[in-house]
Image (cartoon, rainbow, N blue to C red; front, side):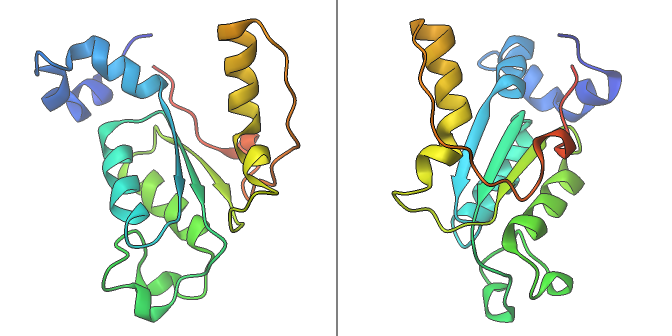
Length: 153
């Protein structure tokens, strides 16, 4: 995996840190993070993770943007009022860093759907790391995975 000139410039402050370096930045690019809730806590977390170059960010939220959210939910803007928070979030995250793949789930998390949301990644870990096969129900993506932007390094 090689960085483009633009990615080297974007991540240069990480790359020059001995604690991160190019190797660490490549690990960040390969990382996947699921953020449950695109509100007051999930908003800044998502922005910082996208800016840092996390490869895939999943956003889970069943709510829409409301004017009363905007003083604390910095992922959203006035133009996104009444839009699903996951769609507003995807727009902002890809504007901050177009290399980040954003998967969206416009649902409220509960015991019936969490395994479907986590399923594909958990199945992969079981298969690759443990040599086991498991299957969880399919998650309902707002964004089809083939339309999520991917990082190519």
